[in-house]
Image (cartoon, rainbow, N blue to C red; front, side):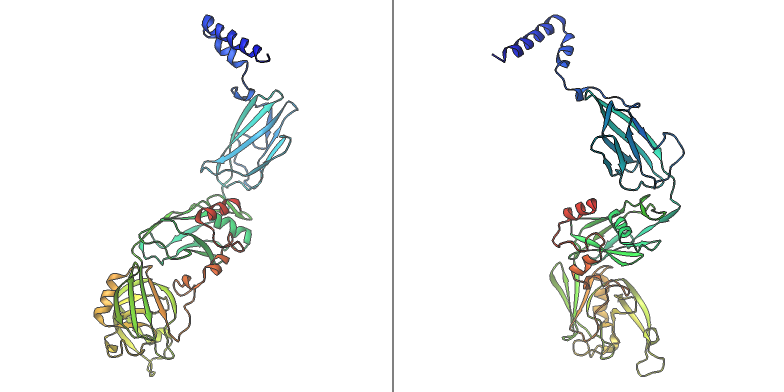
Length: 417
């Protein structure tokens, strides 16, 4: 039968093993595949448009590898820098040429590994290392806020040293900025302007989460002769989910921790003409004592609305001067009427309790006020007042894509674009 020769071959080999020992290796190799062989040095088979050990080269010049002669072809090329970043490239169908399709990083050290095969299918390998010249102009990134523990409403900020206006350049920047939380949360960057981005989740951050923020922009080409600089990573943690909801119509503040009401406080908010802003704000800081003057918000000194007051236990929620604070002078109106110039006032005891229980990043929400809506940007962190769909439209990577992506899908999108 047709199987007989194969049986005889195996028996023959077995006899060699018994009689010669080491000869078994030769017998097994006779049926091996060429690709199982140790790769040969393909130095004479490939050529680079770089020279090993030469002076640093311009990162804007694409890397190119070509096959020499007709006795072999390129099967694979891997180019990676010392930071572990791979260079995307394209190999021709006939294996004669490979070239990079994305710019190289500036000021980087690269190692290139080229795999080949000869006309018999035997594998070859060739390696080359080279450096690229440093960037002439860099784009620095500074993350915020400073490292520490925050409330679940705290956005992450990224401030750039140079304006980035081009959509493609913005995509490069955004793709290089990584925000990971444990537990995970779906989120996105939003371009506030040409030099600042904010990152927030779809909902608030999970309570008691860890948030790691990093940049992989170092050396990466952003625009014409503009490359990214190294950035200091940032680590944040969140505490309990603390929310203070002020109803300007009922004159009551309800404070919740992790969804459970822990205190209800009688308050007064802004009177007509000075109505408190509606919407979600985020605690910006706490000041035990503040001297509040009407002139700071445009009220002429000596006018009927003028004031100059010592204020204690002041929790700031806007840069323009809106606070939650002690207002002993309005104790008779708290819970009954709105008489302030825009702040949320309460008794000294309640203000001290609030001051001691909140931290930066906690949520302060005002409803049923006749005032304007809190602006998303420019006067504190009103980021949460943008619906999620509109927030995503401010991302160079997610704008125009369908909602409902998981964190894994979003990461994959960043890698593909």
